[in-house]
Image (cartoon, rainbow, N blue to C red; front, top):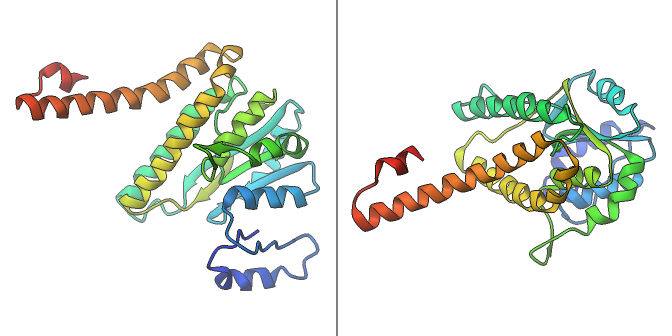
Length: 256
């Protein structure tokens, strides 16, 4: 599926190569509507029991589908994600660090959350969903607003929160490997992180009422993830303000 992006000509040979394959449908949207609307268009055209979302810059290992399907055999599971790696990890110091960040996010954070059946974000590059659950949630997913405008970011986290709100489990499968392209320059990386942070805070607020019904570890995990960066930001701003006003920064500010 192409969401009406400007580089349709560049991928036309790919579309042509699958034109006569009865297993493949190519959907070209007439105007650029963003990832969420494009994803919804594909979901509405789908007919299988399970839907696998793979981003266009992501390559999946040959056994990813079978491993995710195995997890989805439990009808209580609404979504499952694979392990993400950076396909361009060797390009620069930044891509190497992002690859390490992905490893930690998957094999510490998601691996811990999946012990309680509540991965808080099934990441967009490689996530499998139960189609019957998607169809129940699609209208809510499509009509999400943020500050009075249709939301155009954080679709993976919001869809995961909707799954949990509907009573489904969300899981992580560490041996289902997907390699995705990550930013190799600092400015695009910071823009991406800002977009993800907005999604994290927005959808954490939407999902706070879920926490009492989940394990206490998850409450601690979610609060720690969200309060930690805020406290760091506040202490940094306070230090800069004190430096500007008094030309000094006390030791306890640096310790904080």
